[in-house]
Amino acid sequence: MSRTVFLLAASSLALVACQPAEDAATALEPETPPVIEQPTEVEEVSVPAEDTTTETVEVQDAHEDGDEHEGDEHDDHDDHDEHDDHSDDELADHDEDAHAHDDDHDHGEAGGEAHVHGLSDLAASLDASTLSVSVEGALANFDLDESLRTLDDVSPYTDGVIQIVGGDCTRDSGDASIRAIGDHGNLMIDLTYTCAAPGNIEGIEVTGFQSFAGFEEVNAVYLTDAGQSAETLTTGNTRLDID
Image (cartoon, rainbow, N blue to C red; front, side, top):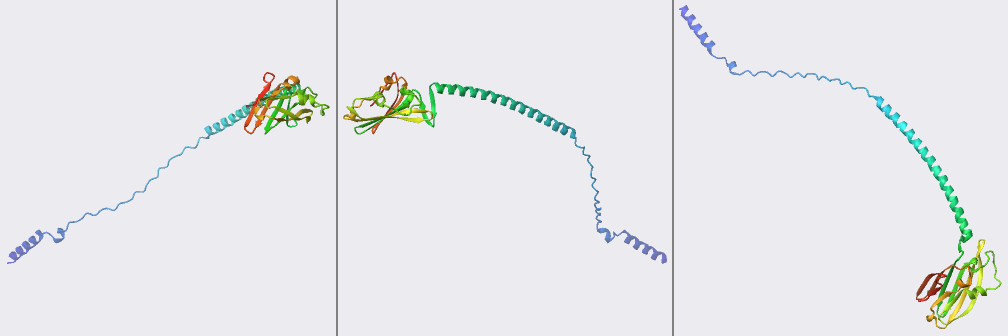
């Protein structure tokens, strides 16, 4: 009997052993191992020392170039001074020539006014039947001394300077005076005419070219309400035509 009970007990134990355990049904999940951060290694980079030799050389070269440039500027300045000296000499020679020319023929502007030997100005204007004419020029133009300041007789100049062509004009007055310009002087002649037929005036003849050896050129202007006429007269063209 005991043997049989022992066998049954052993069989029961074997059956129990053959049954899978409940805990085995649950699958075991593998554990994820923790991540261990590795320390980052910093690579040391060696920086070569700056080479200042090239910079020093460049600075030295620039300094030498600057010295050369200053030398060139100094040379240019010397050349400029020589050129200025040369120009001053030429200007002095030119001034001497111009002054000699002025003394010979042309006094230019003395005291701020025109005074040119050989050149005279004529201005004529017509107002109704009255014709007014003025002539002015250097004393030398009228064969007079430049130092002269008064005239004993004005008739040679009032009578001998112009003649009215046409218009049936009669001279009412005539006067001449000297206007000092520095060491020189101009002769001023003022003439007034009454014209019976002013519309028939044909021109003004400048007889001063024949009367005075110093007359060479005349700037003539004729003014009326209708307009003006202007012309430069010479020994070959002595008449200002009135249109």
